[in-house]
Structures are given as C-alpha cells and as structure tokens.
Length: 150
Image (cartoon, rainbow, N blue to C red; front, side, top):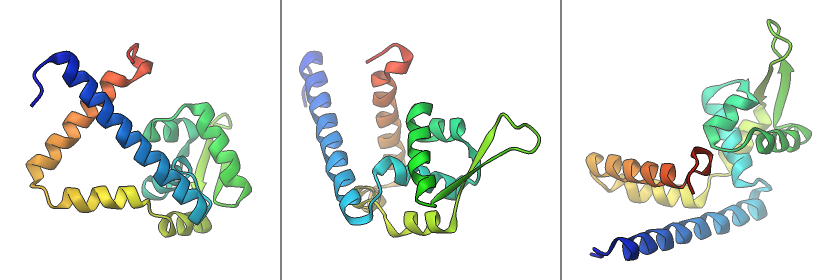
C-alpha cells in the first residue's frame, strides 16, 4: 500500500482516469449499438424511474449542467423519446416526461459498464458496497469544480 500522500494522489487519479476511459468506451459502444449517448440514457432512465420533472431537476439528478440537459432533451424530443409541456399552475416551468418509446429505448439500451459494476458489486457484502459508494462520493466531491475544487 502506498503511504506517500503525493504518490497515493497520483495513483488515485490514474485509477479515476482508467474509469473515465472505460466510461468513454462504453458510451461509444452504446451510441453505435443503440443510437443513445450515456447522458441521454441517464436522462431517460431517471425520467422513467422518477417521473415527470423540470429540466433543472433532471440536470441535478444526472450531475450535468442545465444547458447540457437542455441540448440532450432537444435531441430526445426530436426523436419522440421525451415530451415537454408547461405546468398548468405555472407556465414558466416546463415538465419533461419520458414517452413509451423513450422508456423502451432506455430498457433496451443498458450500459455494459453499469451492468459489469452491478454484477461485481453484487458479490460484495453490503457494508463493503456502502463503503465503496462513500469513498467514490468523497472523491467526486473533491473533484467537483462547481464547489471551487478540481
């Protein structure tokens, strides 16, 4: 085990780069096979799981900027995978809903990487899974440039 803090930080960053590379490869495979990007799939899955919401709420749930989510929703709406409609009680807010076609696309396009993670984590004891999540969330918070870090 590395004890030098600088070496440890370098090893952690290298491991995170490997994860990011795997996520990028997985995303490209998803586009080639299903015509969806990973962020598009995340948006569809969250809408399917949590129901209609504003694009701002969705942006928070998938950790993307509101502008990025707006672009994603524009493309998904053109393909008939989501709909947007103004809230009757407040016309300034627009609710986004996944369509039946969008739900079917999300169900048919599971991420291989996500499935590999789920399969591997299922073999760990519950306490270990919770600890993995805690550490990853801690590292994500450290790297989050929105909090003046990164």
